[in-house]
Image (tube, rainbow, N blue to C red; front, side, top):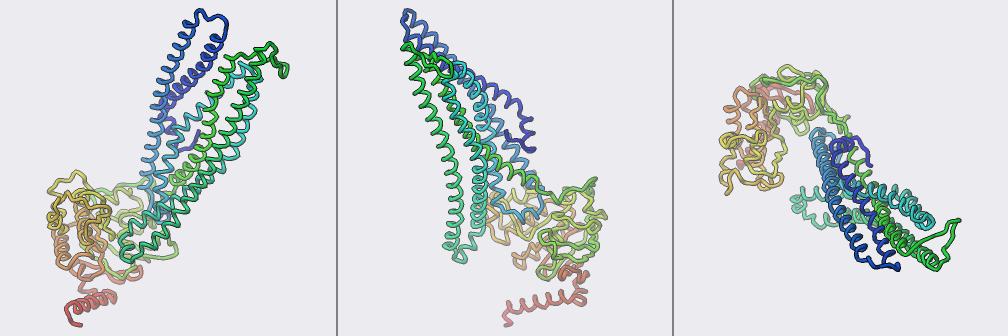
Length: 599
């Protein structure tokens, strides 16, 4: 039995499946034991002198064998339905828990853990556990109950002959104990190599455009061959151990069967000749029918022996896989609701950073924001500019509580976000991320992501707000157009605008645009900014930009430089008091002159 805190509750939840399945399995095992007995009786009866009512006797035994077959058929149907049902439901429940865990884990975890490893846990490791809980349970019950019941019957029939069968069986137990840890190690290595293969493949599929653009197909193929070879070698290494283990068990079983048949034939011949063999003070009285029954019992015992070997293999794999999954489930959820968390309600949109200093968990020694202090009035439209790496996107990340920060440094409507529930903080903010990620869904599905029940009118209004309605309607399928994985069928500007429409439809009191109009032309940008002023009037909007033209009509603009607030004032005043802003203005004017043919 594989015991683990993440599995034990499923044993309790589906106990009725396991109990009914085990009862059916034991019933099948018990019925199966009568087959050798009846076959032996038929052989003994037909080999005797009196066969006058032989037809009636044989017919009776054949009828009993048919009843046994019916019981075994029904019982097998029951245990297959119950035990396999329980194992599959357990796998589904565990997968659901793992997915929920993935949603609770912070950005830090995904920065440190590769996608390939996570996908391997969700696929091969879960499948391995499901196999053990289903077929492994069958193997374990058969190895215990069927094996014990057969052994008892064999000893009752003739304990001397049984010794010739049981003593070599100890080799199987010893062999299994020796190989179990070896197989677990090989399986863990196999899974690690599979993680690497999955991760390499996923990364290449995602970056296929870059690979083609730099004509690196051959180089990546060579690298893939190396990774695939390691995966192949790890698989072959595990299979070699597994096959060698099974082969040794098969040889032991075949040797035992040969011994039983050889010694059994000697005992029967001696008994038939009137001089039975005496061993250890015991006279072996074995008839031909008894030998058939004994061999039948041993034939039944072969499956528990094989099941024991399979159980060792499955347990080694399942224990390793469960260890990997448990490590994932035990991962620290560093971004979570605090004790006695309160929910933000009726958010007006007032934001205040108060001497906020922040470093990313993956780089604790690098200060990204250093003593940042500024406040945004409710309903105000504010721009944020600065050089690359100045901390602009970090402000957006903190406002959506993707990371922890020091208490008393960030407030929404006067409430410390570290005292509020994650759900309420994130519900109050609609983010248009710098990386405009779209799901492989229809355009309407992507826009209505925050509210799947949104009407067509609301979806169209959001598309018009983002100035993407015309592009969508030009597609043959319109809003039913499937974007493809990560929005591959759309241009960069279209993806940004669909992402903006998605955030607008959320209708949150605070909206943040993280450099979300960088891929659109100037005219489209002006339309979007006008829509923000008109349709987001009275609601807080923060626009993070790399171009001064994007924020020149904002009520105020925050200038960040190396994680510090350089200035926070109106665009007109910034040209006088902020060197960074003034330089950005000059660079944009120079760019405009170059495009206009001044150089």
